[in-house]
Amino acid sequence: MSRAKDTQKDFIDKQVEERIRQTWAEKNVSISFEHELPNDHYSPDGIKDKNDRLLFYEHFREKMKYMTSKTWKDFGKENKRTGYETLPLKQFNKNMQSSLKNTNIVSPDSKLDIIRVTDRYRVIGKYLSGVYYILAYDISFSAYSH
Image 1 (cartoon, rainbow, N blue to C red):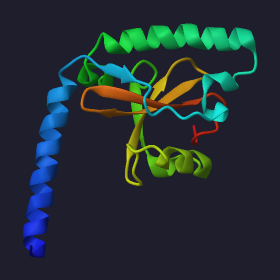
Image 2 (tube, rainbow, N blue to C red; image 1 turned 180 degrees about the vertical axis):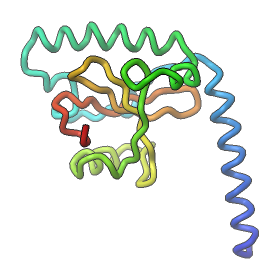
Image 3 (cartoon, rainbow, N blue to C red; image 1 turned 120 degrees about the horizontal axis):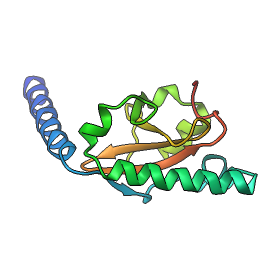
Image 4 (cartoon, one colour; image 1 turned 90 degrees about the vertical axis):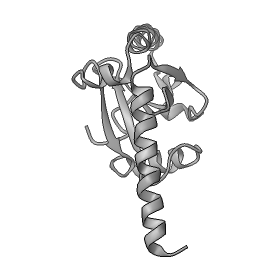
């Protein structure tokens, strides 16, 4: 196939991908833990204080319940304190980048969606086809520059 045909095919593929993404943005969000990192440094298990960990889980449950009651499109219209913010993989620290590359849904040009659970804790994930895949937790403000 010539380079012109490759470019045209890439353009069409991106258009189709965008239409699919927009279709899923109109449906309520689902959550998956399928690709969650097992590393304690990026897990709620890394929260040393038992009371803080319980508080995290309480807020996490509330946030996920709130998020799944909305469409991704509506959730994205909120500010980053109540909705999410998107960051490219390259903005994460090197340790986090290498850990995330071990998942099969993150590529070097990926953008990840950060959800603020509390002022101290964040969830790092990726939204694909109606599902928010939780990948890691930023429990020590060390995953990326805040």
